[in-house]
Length: 557
Image (tube, rainbow, N blue to C red; front, side, top):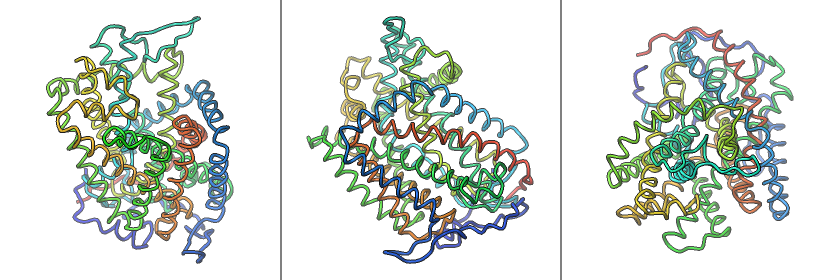
């Protein structure tokens, strides 16, 4: 591991407009005549712009058409979204599961290969951020709202389904239990339920993020190409990435990011509205959810205007502190000993059940593998341009091995801890006769669980604040990434463009909520995740070729 940097001036330099820094030390730059931003339109309309005309123009137009159709045809769109979701998960769940398994195997293989010695940013590059800041931004962007929404609801759902066992009608399983369930066996159901949860929050999602981030960082910081998805295809397409093949890849990345982000924002709005209803009896209606999105999007615009160091970084660190304070509160006011022992039991259960839960073919537990796993893999793949590019931007100076170990293992262990504490506390309550948390709607389970602990009003308010700040950091990070893509790879484009994309992400979340609710959110994230999974699989070939051409890192003091 390299030593921590004494300051973080490089990131401030990027915010000030210096763009992507040149490699430090030995690096194998790609020889191309293309200049970052050469195809951009620069000028002043209502505000200063510096954007790639084709990528920005087509993406914006298609998004506008989608929003108008969804808002004007709400009654027709809901069954359409639900039908599309059911068809994709029913017929292609195996593809999503196989793809994510490939990402995991490749990421682990790189850790142990000689290619792990390559340093992102050149053989003598130094890290831009301390480990604490690095992890804080990574978590806030990567899984913030999802951890709040599913931290209680998913473990308790899998536990109750597993405990109920399997049911078969006309030769087809109709239950939602993972694998074969564990009828009537509370201990076995707890282990299976927690392992089924960890599958979706452990190595698989972080391997997706890690491979995308590694690809982008390598081709940008080491090869001198723009920080866009098209760059990772240079070993495959060569100079054609500057033409329409590259435009299509970047447009797919914009759509994938927008709808992955909108899904998270929609879930956050649903949970925040449910929490306000639970605490203050505010009506949990579409109007409340829309007003929440509008209010939080407004705060997001202020965070975007403040910049990465002044806005996003400090919000991320605040959120990380609040999240772990809430986790420690539940740990020490809940069944402390059971939760501590449960952490190690859950890690063991995760490793034990991982091969069976990851199997793409021959699954009998279709309601679990299709409704949960296929949706998650599509969601994480849709998020991968957003999270991957953001991780890439803050990971310059790390070796490939250091990068992959940190991005794979540390978040996985923390997610196991999070699900153990939040989900384990809820399961303990159900086993103790408090059935309310099991009967509550998904978005309400967190608040019902907190309601059974001391100081429930205070902790529920902290939970609400976390949801809202995670909303802000996700939208802020997402606008940063989408703006980079639509600005032709420039990371110093005018702030007004980031404000535009932050606003658009909120508008899409509103459109999907009104046009079909949770079903619409799931349908769009799966439909955009499918083509992008193919893009990422091809991109894996590019990153291997790119790493093989790089010199190995030197020790950096």
